[in-house]
Image 1 (cartoon, helix red, strand yellow):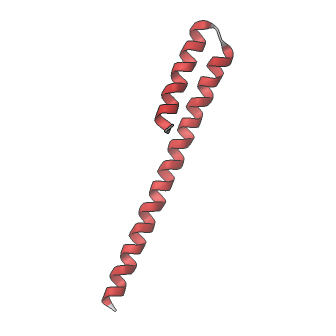
Image 2 (tube, rainbow, N blue to C red; image 1 turned 120 degrees about the vertical axis):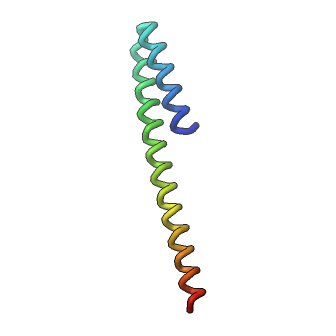
Image 3 (cartoon, one colour; image 1 turned 30 degrees about the vertical axis):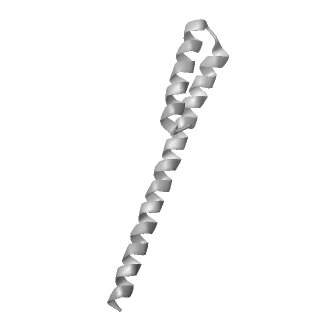
Length: 67
């Protein structure tokens, strides 16, 4: 699952746990939300590194053509 879907799943679990008085389910929901946020942050970092690497490769190709 993606980060956003984990966050949504977590919100639902937390709400159901709160409504039913199920502390374990509520805590699982909070954990799912946190995991979703971490997944999103990691994916953003990976995307940024990938873009930077692609930019570096493009610049290297341009520099090579000029030689």
